[in-house]
Length: 143
Image 1: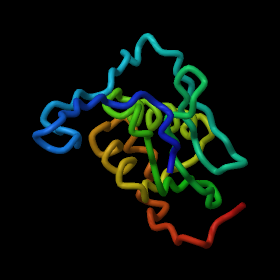
Image 2: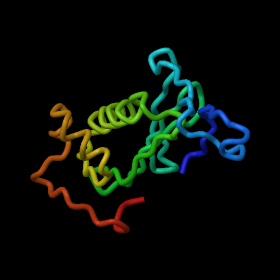
Image 3: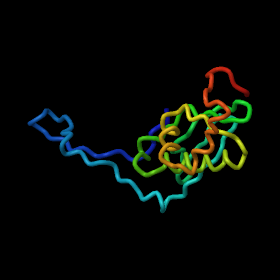
Image 4: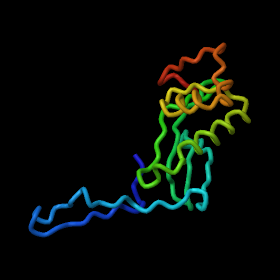
């Protein structure tokens, strides 16, 4: 799980009505900057078997994979809570898939996020190459 180092929402507390507990109806969501103004970088980290997305140098999310011959199997994607709702998961998937295409690999989207992303973005559906068999066996892969 990613460390949540981002800003947190502020909740008002009240004195006597609820004994100083947080009043969730008065909570404000954390301030979120516009992703377009951030310095966003996506890169492959082969030592960790994952593509990572960083915002202003801080790790914001990642997509874990393993290589299996001439294909890449995406098994898990995560975006830190502080960065949710900014389109970073989609940006991570898009740039990872573009890199995979450039490397001539096919894709097995075992991760539900990648499967859904490919399903709604037809420009990436050719990467699944149905004729090669889309089934991956966890635990049996190349290092």
